[in-house]
Length: 59
Image (cartoon, rainbow, N blue to C red; front, side, top):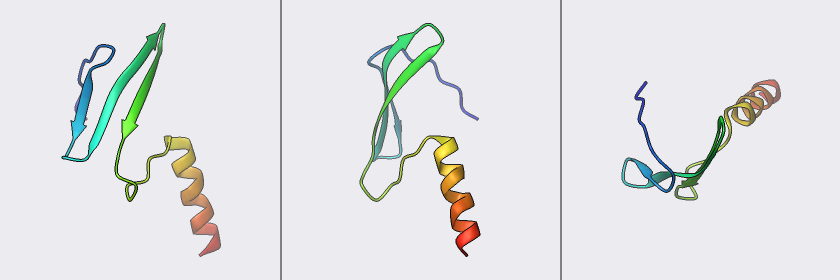
């Protein structure tokens, strides 16, 4: 796992197409803005896992 420190309004690039920007920091919560091409799905992990479980039960 790569661990980076960023401040508000700073961005991390993943490849050439995905940007993750620190939008806000309040206490222990960090708000992130994610810019990615439409063909790359972006989900919170718990949503992604629910989608995976649903797809496995349908198959």
